[in-house]
Every structure is written in structure tokens, then in C-alpha cells.
Image (tube, rainbow, N blue to C red):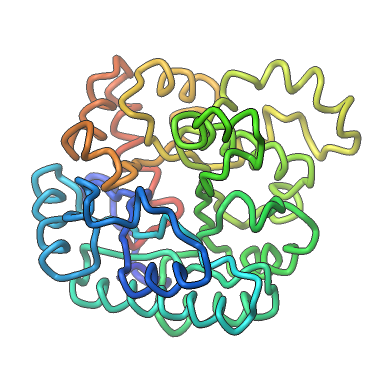
Length: 333
């Protein structure tokens, strides 16, 4: 289990730590489906990846076999569907069930699996209670939040108490798209929520966090934006010129604020996206991420990391991305 207090290891002694890996908790998916929160494509046993991503022991054993073959030492688990429900009691029940199940799977495989805690948002006080339980009682590696909560950006002021607590704890915050197409008909009516809308969400949440000066106000949170930040890496020069005009009061240039985030490498093997992210953010801001088991339909698990090795980056950059950076935010991984 990844938690505070362990000695820092040298990067060379570590295998890969995959910060972007999912698990499908059947009892949780059944519960939230009863109140209308369901994503059939990712929640169905008919999904080719489900046999590796389910929370039963057989699937977990298959997961670890793939990890071994790919040279992955640890996966940090998170859900694809957050417990963001209008009714307080149901939201708390769902988040508790999800976190308890994650913790149980992790406990059966110490040193191989870890988990991010999920929160029953938008109920901030209850979310703070579950945050503390997840980190202090269940020993989770950090917290996960979706890019938005019930059509409200997580950068909105109502969620400031959560950021305050994460900052006080110097915690890791892993962000993930909702696959809601930014609530836009121009995305959803064209069936683009999953193919492209997720990257738009990644980009939008980074911009929202910048506009609210979250990286400057809460500098001790280690915020991970998935999928190499969506399209953010290609926008920094434009943002440096134009975002201060649209959002006066930025704490720093957008390009500087962007380099205070971390980014996982899940990108369907795009060499162009990886190279752009290294040039824009620096190899020292990237972390290994696979989006397991979602991409198993398209490629072998190990390809998520061999793409990096064969990307044309300098050897030192490859080692930094695959091994060294994680020690800075999860030192006991």
C-alpha cells in the first residue's frame, strides 16, 4: 500500500508505477445504476477489457499477470464513474462502498496495487469526511476527482474546502474526465464524448484551475491531469498572449501555471502528443499512465510504456518519465 512515511527509494530500484488504472466495482456500479448513474460501455461484462478490470480475484490475478509482463510494479486504481449524486445519503453510501472495495482489493495485493479515494460530491462536508477516512483509515495514495461534478467545474469556489484540505496534507489529486462531452450538444449529439470530448475535458479543467489560480493558491497539491493534458500543450503560447485578457488576475503566465501540474502519459501511443508534452511541460512533469484496462481493446498493456521508450526521446527523458518522477509525488511507491 502506498502511504506516507516510507523511506524514499532510488528511481533505479523501482519498476513502473502506473498512475492511471481503473477497476470496475460491480456492487458499486449496481448501486449507482439504480439511481440512474450508469455508463454501459464501461460497466458491462461484455466489454473486452472487463475480464481484466473487474474487482473479483480472478480478474485481479489476470491484471497482475499483465503488470508483470509489462514491467509494472504498482497500479494506482481509480474508478471511471465517480459517486456524484444529488441525494446525500446515497452519495456517501456509494463513495464508501467504492473506497472500501478498492481498499480490500489493494490489501490482498500489498505492494502491487494502490488506490485513490473517491469523494461523495457535491456534498463538500461529507466529502471532507470521506477524504479523511480514505487517507487516514484506508491508507489511500491520494484523491481522485472528475473534471466536473454534475455540470459544475471542480475548480468552482464551492469546492475550495476540498482543495484546502488536500493542500494542507500535501496530497496527490488525480483528475479524470466525466465523459460528459462538456455538456455540449456540439460534442454529444455527434457521439464525440469518448473519442474527443475527454481530451476537451482535460484541457478545460486545466484552464479552469489556472483561472482560479489553484496551482498558486494551493501549491502543495500534486495535481495530475490525464492524457498528457488533452490539447493544453499546443496552446501555451496562445494562452500566454490571450488568457490574461480574458481572465485578469492570473497569478502567473499560463505557461508557468501549466508547468506546476503533472500529466500522465495515456495517449493511445501518440508520439506527436508525447513529444509536444515534453517540449511544453518538460519531461520532469510526466508520469506513466495507461488508462488500464480501457486500451486493452486496441493494444497490449505493455505498449503504453514501450511507446515512450521508442518515441525518440533521449534516454534520460525516458528514464525520468518511467521511473524518476513518481518518486517526487509518491516516494514510497
